Length: 173
Image 1: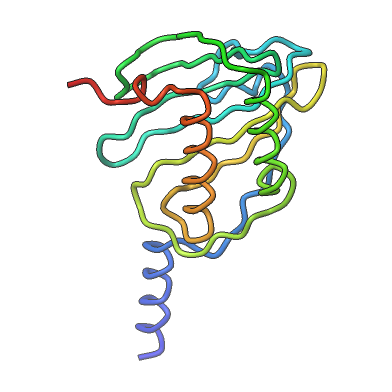
Image 2: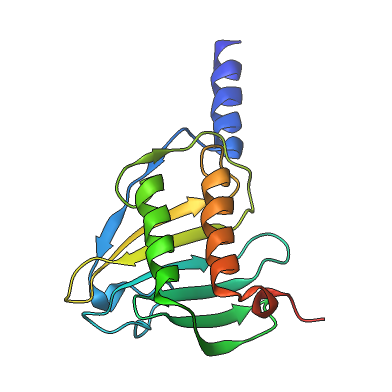
């Protein structure tokens, strides 16, 4: 009977996820791009960014960078109406507002504990420039985890609305 309970508990944990924390990391320039290759930013550039990953279903896969001079770089990878690298310009204040949100939420400065997680949900990578050498501070937030879902919704929503790329994210019809 006791062995059955232990097996059940371990199985339940495997399906729902453990209560863990994702630690923010600083990655060197060459390893900082979410999908590998040469990063979109150059050493010394100040930016904030989000990158959405695949999920079970139809989730847009993209990277969205906002630089301190107002440049916006969108890289649509899959499930977006714009595929490839697209550029636009916003007011430099947008960068400041997005950076303020990242600082206020402490998402890149502290461990944020997560609780149970649903399988197959997309993961949002949140990033900002860390050093003049091009290093990047990054953290992964699973949108299906209790403790992360509201953060993902707030941060990703603000990036999309502040930059006006919502039409670029709409899946192709």
